[in-house]
Image (cartoon, rainbow, N blue to C red; front, side, top):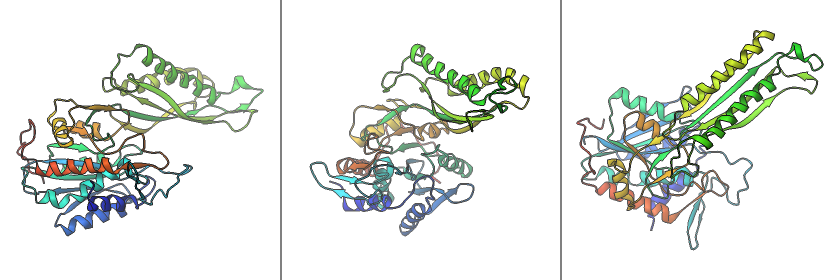
Length: 398
């Protein structure tokens, strides 16, 4: 059964509107102030205009090394969705499966709230390692905040032992996910009256040719790429999500743009995928520039979220299995910050309450049973006296 304290923490976080387009400082300052009551100092690292912040706090300052409990504070919006409950209401519904409703309940304020409710227990723990709390901004729009958080830790010499990211996996440790690489392609042509097409460069048509390349690559992945079993789609994918261009039927369009993405397997290389698109664009530009030297393609990066590949044999995976009571591991279809933590040299696993099937949906919820499993996870972490297969790096927790 979930403790009243954990439930109260989760409900408090759910009532704060931290949709990615908004500031998350209300939540960050609330957590900072609550930790300060326990004598814990928090490190904040900000975005460029200081409207958003990451928080990093260490529970057990003088212990060697530490385990990060990581979560993102931002949520996706609910505009246009048909909710039957208030998205910020944190409504608890009893029944055969008691559920807590609200935007971010599964993704991923449930995990954050349960972790924070155990801050005092972590402080008083006799475990031979510290527990770090890491809260990030702008995960949902590109995992931007965590990069600043990790850079800040590197600058001050904090070297955590491992990281557990509490994305919704139904408390089964996840050891792999695909990457998410999104780009915007802007096409500049040359306008003309539609009766004079030879003197023009049609931006929509040129965009369509490059979109055809994206589709060809997607078909190639499906036909030829070695499978990575365990994923719902066991090969890399490519797709176009948005397109816009043209101003009138009788004007050859000068401008067009489209967004596209790659979701690469952990064994694939998204950088090479993007290079293939750019190379095709440069080939198309040769004919375009003969008509209009200013014509061409320009690319903007929307987000680059690396894939994640851990192992069932990693000490942090075995720790998560020990804490969750799960003997198995899983792979997830969605992106997380795990690849970024791992690239920085921090062994990582993904394990948290709830299901991604409820995330981003109308009437998003997390079951109280899942939150109770997460609470037992935290209690076991506080009681842990040794880490499976790990050795202290000799660095302090900061």
